[in-house]
Length: 580
Ligand code: ASP
Image (cartoon, rainbow, N blue to C red):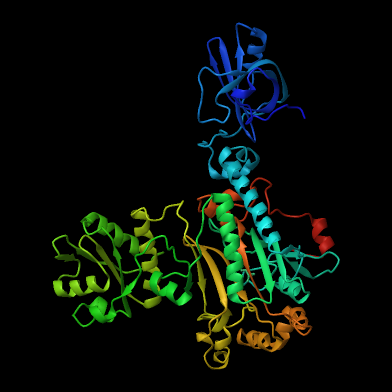
């Protein structure tokens, strides 16, 4: 190695050692007769000292070094007079005897500091410089540890990691495919996998009863902070299991990761039905770090002459503890919040439960204190609490109240980043009806098994059929999802027909899987975790991009390598493709 130590390594015990370090010039300071340089590498920062009195030529040479120059320095470890307890090497500095410039650097377009002056686009363009910043390095280290610990845990549980192909054909996850033209099979295209779903099921047929893969998936969807066109899953499948075996196994994985990465002991992961999640939180991924469960108020509010309630399909509310003293301004803010187009409520009704057991409300013209008392009773509201009520179309206001609940959780500081409350949500509907296209879609994917007791309903009332499916939710973020699969060819056929596939279409798209099911498919099920999201939740961030070395921007572009890009006329010709 060109160095004897890293820049994060030397401590007071190394005093007087002669060392050679290599790294980047983070910053330099000239203080009278002394020049200090912070030398940085992946492991930390070490302070270098040059002394005008003892070695003028070297000190003058050091004063010429620009930011991000790569240098190698030779010197002695000395105790610092001005120690910095915030740095791992803060007790020492290197008295430099000699140094070599290994490479110079242009002045970087933004400062390589945690609080950088570079905007998003600029940092994406120079991502290799952005990655030199400690925040990004910490995130990539976290991701690395997560993948190592995942492999350790699954390996210990007898899972085998098997790679599946990227050049395949359409997968069933319901997003748009990215396609790749085939030169050798002109006019034909591969699709990149939205997930390895069909392959992992084929591996079960092949007898590899515990499979996993940390694998890239590709979905051509509109992007958000927590979506990227290519993202990574911890993809798993098991044979000869029930739902509860899967929940137990992957509760084990979650516990292992919490313990090893965050040092947190998770007792157990509660299980909530999809119906309850929607009923009490208005969301299929409830944040259960705090309460404020929904209470339906229809029986207590109708028929008193308040048109908004009388005409509403549903009236629901939450009780916000300790906010009974909210001011007019604060309540107006909440009303503005629920009226935002993305929330979509038409107004907000409040009841303040005063300390003296009286009530103040925006609807006191229509209701008496006795009414409010009744509402407070059913909502478990106490003096000083604030009741917030929405009325309207059921689906819409459940969603809106879900958002308001999260907003109140934020306002009250109840959504602490270091408080982790994982949750299994189970028994999702199997199918979703789409009004526009007038057909059913699989809520998860078409290989998800109905709950056995609901199979007869497939013929009579498919809307009511529940899936043997589950999601892992952590703090309101969906981290993973999976299901017990259909392993019976007839049932799979029926499912395809409910989803509007003709026999021919089903055979064309998924015939290989249905054929495989004729050769002894074991009962099986699995799950996949969004690995980038898992990392983001552990890293306390909303953005998965921060945990991906080279992410794309919101338009799906990599602005560093400038992709996607046009291809040459020659390449198009080779592929027999004409652009319109
Ligand atoms: N393939 C599914 C997905 O990507 C996960 C699973 O069912 O295992 O969501």
